[in-house]
Length: 229
Image (cartoon, rainbow, N blue to C red):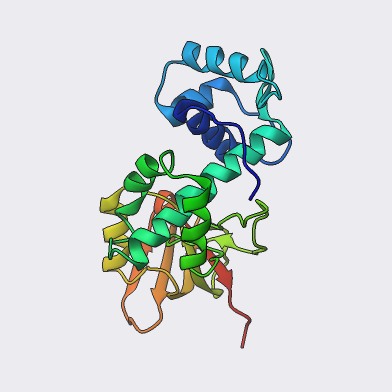
């Protein structure tokens, strides 16, 4: 992988946050970035103005429109995301961490490893496409693997799918889901979507008991739709 300019941890964290809040070419507000990073809004404004003045600029910022990543900013965000997700997979597969434990560890380590270490880590892990949570890992060219997933909240009654991703959540919620059989690669059948309370009634393959999930939990679960028999 080609070398890239060296940016501070704070800059990398801002780029990741903006990436997570936007799609390619979209803008997000500084308020949402502040909430994501748990910092004061004026601090966000100051930082994005600085990043917009970099050479090359990492973001595009307009006071009444918000902030978006430039091509250079998106590339740097993806580099940091690649390292983070490779580290998560290493911690689970090689060091035996629980997959709900690895996010905080990877947050600390992603800023410390070199490009050479990153490449050796990817080779050790077999150039993986997905991390332990099912999030896609950018490859050496920073391209993301193709995928077609939907959240549990988007599935209709009678549909089935296989869990391919569970977004980062509090460890307590992750444990709650696992206690109900909702884990990576589990097959789930949607029994009912209840509009008035926004709950999803599900059954996990191999478990006879019906479970009810609230919208917040169901929106974290991404599935690959199973073809109808």
